[in-house]
Length: 102
Picture 1 (cartoon, rainbow, N blue to C red):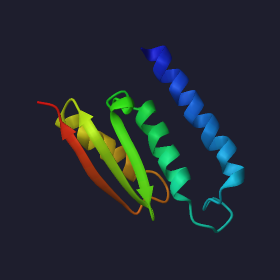
Picture 2 (picture 1 turned 90 degrees about the vertical axis):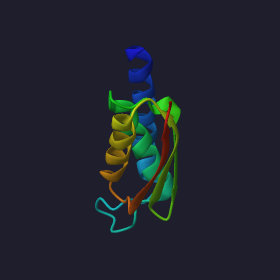
Picture 3 (picture 1 turned 60 degrees about the horizontal axis):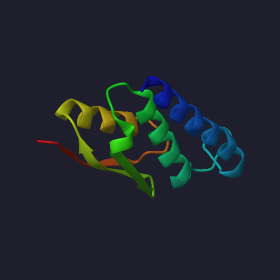
C-alpha cells in the first residue's frame, strides 16, 4: 500500500517537474499558475498526505478555484483534503464537495 502511494507521488512529482517548463508559474516568471499545474500539485499533495486517500478524491481546477469531489471515510479526511488544496500556490478558493461515507 505504501509502495503504491510512493510510486503515485513520484509520478505526480515527475509530472509537476516536467510541466514546469511547459507551463508558466508564478515562481520567477511573473505569470499566473495554470489550472493544470494547480490540479497536478493538489493531487500530489493529497498523495503525500497519509490522512487522505487520494484515489477517492477527484480534483478539478477552473480559474484557480479547486473543486474536490468524491467520497471520503471521515470528516477529518474531508477537512484535511481542503487544507492540502488551499496551501497550493495559485489556489484562489477551494470548493469542497467531498461527501463522508456513511
